[in-house]
Length: 78
Image (cartoon, rainbow, N blue to C red; front, side):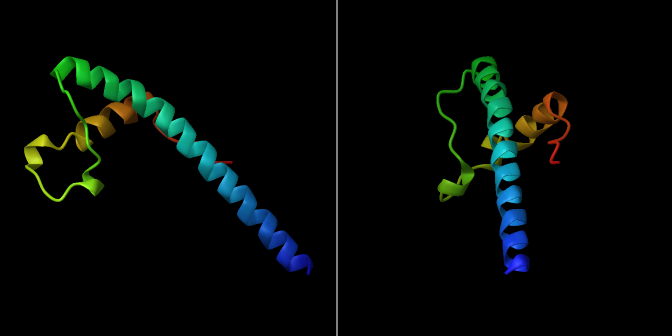
């Protein structure tokens, strides 16, 4: 019973950390995307996981990741 309680506590802690990291990441990505949209006169950004196909020239993932790495070098998971 003690093991199950400790395990559940550890899993809950990990879930909380992941949620906080995700929230931090989203807060940093949103302004980056907004600036990129304005700079490049983009009218729509679509998550590539929800598209069936498209030109790789339209994929801005690497640009966003590069800018995100400058803003947020790492997520501190304690």
